[in-house]
Amino acid sequence: MVVSFAILARLLSPQEMGIFAVLLLVNGACQIVGTLALPQAVTRFVAENLAKGRARMASGVFFQAVRSTLLLSLPLALSVFFAATTLATSLVGQQDAAILFRFLSLEILLYTGLLPVLTASMLGFQRFRDAALVGIANTLVRQSLIIFAVLLLQNFLGLVIAWVIADAIAATIYLVYIIRLLRPLHFGFPLKDMLKFSWPLWVSSNVGFAAQWFDRAILLVLVPLATLGVYNVTITALAEVSEMQPQYSSQQDIRTLCLVLFSILLQRCLWLSSFKLEHPYQKFNREHTRPESSS
Image (cartoon, helix red, strand yellow):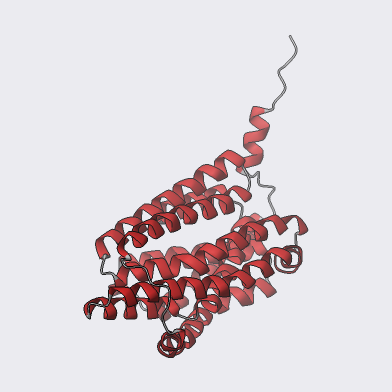
């Protein structure tokens, strides 16, 4: 993850990294709203029913959660799809970016309607090793596809397309694996019981998401996308470092350090803005389309 993000930060311009932050923000918000913390309820009720020998009820928990999250995520995905032009104009300031939000609507169906319940079900079935293997493979495939697509298409659209394809592959693998575990099949379980357990967790998830993204949401309104992109790279890199060395940092320390480094990076960006820099794509096109000198 660290290596691929560093490569992306080199391949994409600061403005494109800002657009990436916007897409992550919209996608994450849809997931929080569209799941109602049902994946946490799936883990609890699947494990509980399996422990009591009620495999039929565990199957009902899974299908009830998948049906509910898909029904919740579908209006969100359709809203993003049909409002793509408005979102692109208001959030990104580029009407041409509407196609990015249309592809993002497909990702919302996967990231909100399927993947959270599928991964939670793996934990409920206590398939921890298999869930970890699929998760690691998905991360590697996703990052590799994203880098390959960006290099191949030489634009930001390749990143979003690869993002959707990788998550579709992961959802298919999870679904095929879980269906084989669900014997006998049963499609009913009281949704009220699941919501009674999940709604406090859903409130907590909303608070946590707001705490994690409030600074970037504010910057989206106040600063250019390029500045948001620089900030997002900084805070993401520091979060990755903190996960590798948790003993050296707390959440508050990370935020403070981010603000300090961001101020330094912002000064450097303002200084570099006085120079005309050539984007790697432009350099590549110029070198490979240079006309041959006439003999």
